[in-house]
Image (cartoon, rainbow, N blue to C red; front, side, top):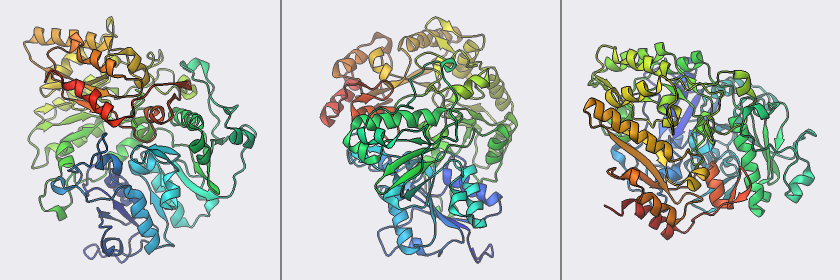
Length: 594
């Protein structure tokens, strides 16, 4: 501040991560975006919450508000394994040291700021706040918890990818707009005491008292032609938090509606009663345009950790420092995944110009040695993909464009992605551009073979030019009965993939490896299912190392199944293994041969 000549700060961020000025870190993205708009932004990374709170006092109060997040991960996932054991390292901390952020970091930081500066607004965001914006199951306390707005006492919550709502909220606070005006900003949530008026199109109070299925609830419609568009002006009332605690079916019904609204192009405002008030979640902004995406990545990131760390290693930074993000979002709709709940279902792609400009800046960095570690995103090969007829997409309420079968409106051509790979390879100074993100092979393959003329060239190019030894894919399981509850395609597609994979290796004399990811003890998975997985002949010769025990994280279909024993898509019962010892036994079957 002294070097910049600042005598005030507009926004002060408190985050559970070390500060890295890289677009893979949300704090840096929002800070740079607000900075571009002319605001003075400061960041306090990993403040000490156990001493006299000097880290929270040192910069005083901001002119506009405090912003709080737990970092790139939910703090509980960051701290504990699926067996609820404490982790001994933290990839987002210098030298990987554990214990530099509290459990439930957003709530802890916010309460401290409210204690010290009760009149200054606090805006929470990031993964932890975003996925806990409504009633959610908390695996570590094994109970339902209300919106994080209730526990933390924050004034506002910004969910999802927050550049646009955070800028609009900042402008509104600066302009002194009244609460009614601010409450209309998209993609924010807030808690209010009292009651809210709901139109007749929403469920009645009697529906909430009795716990009956709401008359306006949506059907589980598999095809876009059979659905109608939502009208954003009609709020949708959910069961109250208290009703969800009493009735697991009410919780499952709530989640089904939350999931639908998170995956449609024109969502409705959600109202969830809790205590003496209610939480309101406004609809998301429309998917970002290519120009809006480029505006985020064209910001002047240094792509380096802050100098305060003086060369200390930050493991998470080492993993992504030479990576390039091509797009946001995922339409895969896996039931255990939170990507769509946070980034959205609709793919938001950067332009080739923006990506190539970032590649050139990366090549110019003194520590770059010619290898891009990852050219991708949550699902690397969804770049540029969308529906052929956008009018159908505007009506669709499907959670997944790929399950239970691929949407006929989805354009799955890989031509644009292949052209991008060729353009990146042609940049002087790039030796290799690897794709380390997961790849959805059901985008170019089915049980009969490749889906179009771009499928085989894509797989061949991916294997021979963009894979550093081993290609990562995620069949997740071998048994169709389990895959149904995961929202994943049949294992027969993986069998076909391995056949094509081995053939390309033979044709080219290469030895590229195939690394499948698997999950144990997912809802619907029994011990005998794991035995069949371990004995599957298609896995012969594959080293089973990329495996994990299912961990119920907030705001996923799978976590709702785990807690309620109901599949929220159908409201039918689903068997779930909840005993920690038996979960451990399921995972052990991955390694029986080892």
